[in-house]
Image 1: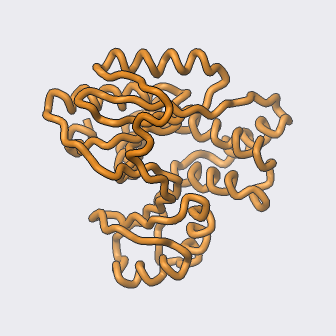
Image 2: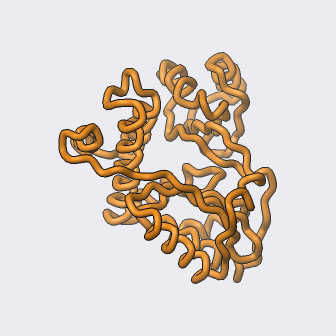
Image 3: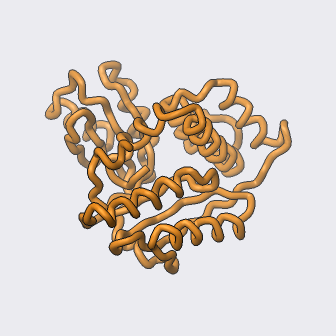
Length: 247
C-alpha cells in the first residue's frame, strides 16, 4: 500500500492469492484489536472501530471474522495487546519510506524492518527523518463509473471534505484526518456512490522517479514489508510504473 493512489495496490493484492487475502485479514484483525482497546467494542460509540469495520467489509472480510476479532479484543476470547510503532527510512535511490506497524513484540518487528531495509539496498533512519515530506490526510476512494466530477465535488464539500482528485477510474476525496469517518458516513447516504476505501493516508509533498534498476529494489522492499504481518501500512514518495507494481 503506497501513500498515493493506495486503492490500486490493495485491489491488485486482493486478487493474487488466498495467502495475500489471509495476510490482509490478519492486519485488519490487529486494527480491530487496537480500536476496541482504545474505544470499546461498540462501533456505535467507537468511531475508529466503525472505520475499521468498514475497511474490513470493503476487503470482503467475513462477518464472523470481524465479530470474533471484536470479542477477542474485548477479552471474551483472550486478548492480545498490540503496540503501534512507526519506522522511517530510505529505500534505494533515496526514496522516502514510512512503515506503520502493530506488534506484540516490538524488538522482533524493529529487527525485521531494519533487515528488510538493509537487504533491499536501503537504510532505516531516525524518527522524523522523512515524515516531514508527507502530509497526513483522510482519503476516501470512490468508484468513478457513472459519477459526474462537478456533482461529486459539490456533494463532497457539503459533507465536510476539503478537495477531490480525479485519478481516472476512481476519485480520491481528501479530508481532515480526524474527519474521515464522519465524511465517509455522510457520503454513504448518497446511494449512487460506491465507496472503495476510507483511511488516514500519508501523501508525499514531492515525488522521485527511480531508474528501472533502482525501481526494482524499491518494489522488492515494499513487497517484503507488506508480506510482514506486523506491518500495517507502508508509504513512499516514489513514482512507480503501474506494470511493475502489478507484477
